[in-house]
Length: 291
Image 1 (cartoon, rainbow, N blue to C red):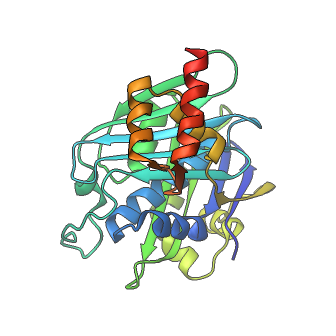
Image 2: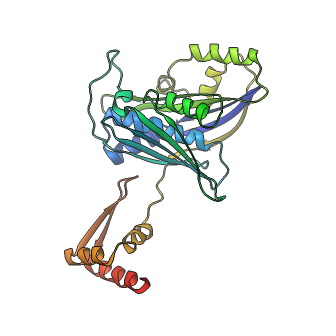
């Protein structure tokens, strides 16, 4: 079952659902995540993809959790074309399970702020933020949408991690009420949300994105719209890393040249770029030429 995001609508409601198991496993591999870090990062990346589904092509969204828990920060970038990347401050964090035997993502994240930045290409990026209410990611994004964007929504996210530390099922959904949603529709949705099973469990059982919507909106007349393939994709490349080196001060570049070698690691994907002494000398000359 490939990673996919499906959009749908029914009277008074728009619904997005995503399966993200493969891309979450790619993030786990790249960052060597512990189960708790994998769950937190996977939920955040999935949430970012759901938020990006509202954007136009060539736009993007960044979701950041800046909590005071031992996990540190979590950041994910996503585009409406289905690309996502992300990282977490302490990917190797190991903390005890909760009393119910589940991963303590909330305890790992702690309290602080969730910030969402939308890059529309029209002037400055649009930023909004709200308090972290639980640290469990889905509740925090639901609260953010209501508090900061005045959008009545329900976000569900899940990452089920196996004993081999790989994701067995990962994904999520987002419901948003539209202006024509009346009280009867709202009550019907609330009852449906009370009955819905964990989304990670659905996916582990083989339910795809369209199937998640079907389970969630049972009894509704749903119109399925588009389907988008999803993947973990980073924007980094050697040219971008060279631009970073070119931005260094003369003294910093001279120090790298004297060392004879530099290794730059992309924070988002873990890719490592190696530069030898001759390359560094060439970059230093280029940088000095434009200073």
